[in-house]
Amino acid sequence: MKIFIDSANIDEIKEANALGIIDGVTTNPSLIAKEKRAALAVLKEICSLVHGPVSAEAINLDASGMIEEARQLSKIAPNIVVKIPLIQEGIKAVRVLSGEGIKTNVTLCFSLPQALIVAKAQAEYVSPFVGRLDDVSHNGMDLIRDIKQVYSNYHFKTQVIVASVRNPLHVVEAAKIGADIATIPFSVIEQLLKHPLTDIGVERFIQDYKKIPKA
Ligand code: E4P
Image (cartoon, rainbow, N blue to C red):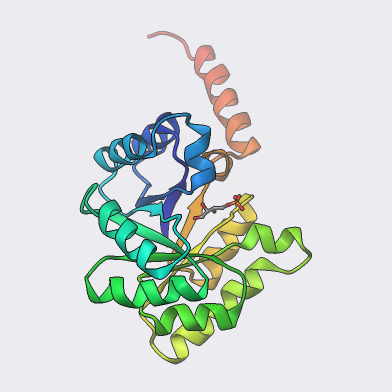
């Protein structure tokens, strides 16, 4: 499973990148707004740090506006993927953009029929939001399971990005299901590698090392 970092924060992206486990980045307008810098500058810097796909979201809501915005965004760097909202106009835009070779990540997916439409439109990625489904008492990971089954039934090429990840269990479940990608906030990446027994073990080895006679 590929791991993307879900962040627009340069320090977080640098730190996660230093771990050598990051395959790409997803951003959204809310994440970029937190950085209090121009979106273009933030996206350019992220693309200079990470060679894998970097998702940048289109904010126009009509197909022609989205297509034009996507063309502009894709000029930032060759690894830009344009995030398109899963609305009727968005699906029209995806079809045109895939024809032009511009990769799209269709975002805000909350149901299986929506995911089916995204695959038929030949998007590169679909992003089902598991945490936001959990928030409204629907099991987000059940949706990932269903999408993977249907995509595999028909050999659809659209890759599933598990998004709105809130905790390590979402990542574990995503990996068990065989999701293509999980996009993970930095705080959850940190949680993934933590285990109290590791910390206790490290501390014990350090203390015991001090008891070893020096030659
Ligand atoms: C995905 O691409 C989105 O940026 C993100 O996962 C949304 O997560 P949230 O529900 O925590 O805002």
